[in-house]
Image (cartoon, rainbow, N blue to C red; front, side, top):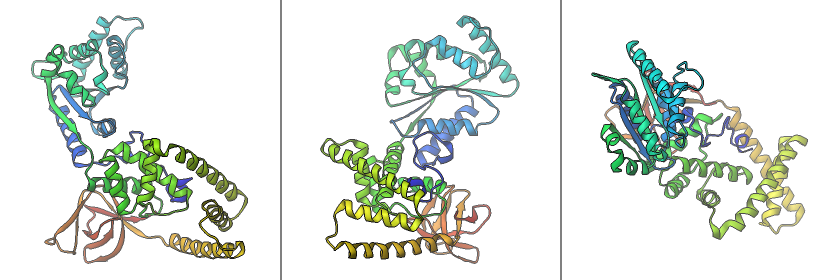
Length: 411
């Protein structure tokens, strides 16, 4: 229901690792560049370590979508036995084998494939997610696979992805041989406050039908204060915010809504009983809205919704007749403003690369912000090779060049 309320074509804050919604912060961009460097230079072992929810799995998905001339294997279940891991790698590389073959034969088939793959000028990648949960025997199997190499080249590049505990596992004495082989160690960090703002705007821009500023600046600061820039927590709290705001008919999300969304996400003991009641009330309101949408026109729907909300909250002591007249009057005004605003198609700027946002249309003027690639901003006006844009929390000028930006419909 919140997607229709906010004119979104998709849920912008779902927590699945979708490369389409990937936002490259400084830390994430550095991680991808180092991964690509390690693969291109055939460095062998690479570790990617970060806290829960920092975007490790998403980075791996983006990496697999961008590397070329590479065969890849993705191990998502680290609890498999060494034999199961070897079989999974053989199947991912689409290596023919006979059912029931032992590990020795599978290993030989893998070695032959990697040599042949190298001779064709191709590379091979094995990504092991949640690697901190691998058994010692599984680590040993992976180390043995890394031994398939030529004197001057590593035939397979192995990326160990895990939480901070992975570093502790690798430092164990019995894993010292593997630990010594890790050529590149990448540490992933949370978003900064500025990156949190761009992250939220980026995901909303990708999902928006009409560009709108849904989150107030104070709300974004509150989200950062609660999540400390953790992308997964940002997604979960932002999604809760959209649900709550749509249920109470509020088009912009403020600090109060963020705090309520966070209390639901965190499951605070002090507010658990209150939240359950509120969630039940929200569900009932959504059901009323949906039913009204089917049985009546849009104007009547809004009237019923506002009336129900007013009655529920008991915020007015006006006589019933006066209250209904006041509600209908407000709804008429809101409907006319909404329809008028959405009938006008606006032009937007879509950044093709990271570009500078300046206070004035001069190359020598100070840079306000560095706008990320893929950000959509409203066009306020254009002036001799420059475009004045509104990017939510920042307004300024960008160079009007096909190399840097596209002018598109805001839809």
